[in-house]
Image 1 (cartoon, rainbow, N blue to C red):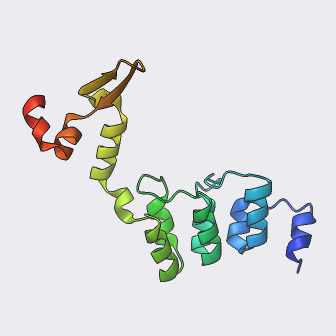
Image 2 (spheres, rainbow, N blue to C red):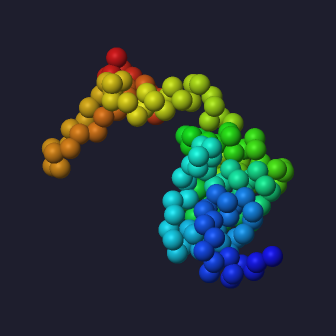
Image 3 (cartoon, rainbow, N blue to C red):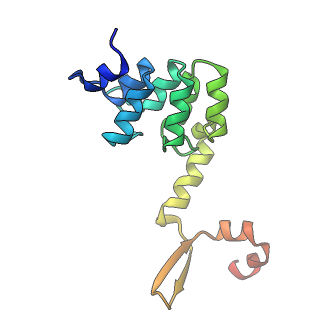
Length: 154
């Protein structure tokens, strides 16, 4: 069995996904910090490195990936996939603490996210003359945050 130093120096082609799967934290750190590989890149099976770390029960690697920018928010593409693949409750709890939840598969959440991001549905435009820039808003969002404006926007 090779030591971590031997793996780092060898010509073995280990990518971030494999390092997360086998649980080699030194190799994961080397790939992320030295080689600067994207921590959220999906592999040929459409799974990010965090998926393999969670699936194989490597909590310390999951923690490292999350601390270094692994996406696990409600709008992350693979959030529910990672959550359900997690080997144990400790990892699921950690993922929940980082806002990973099954809500990412909620169709209403996706609809609201798409409505918010798509300018096709924008119905209010605020133009700031001093910087010659516009902000596009949705009246339902404005009214939900400030009920006084319902009168002016209806």
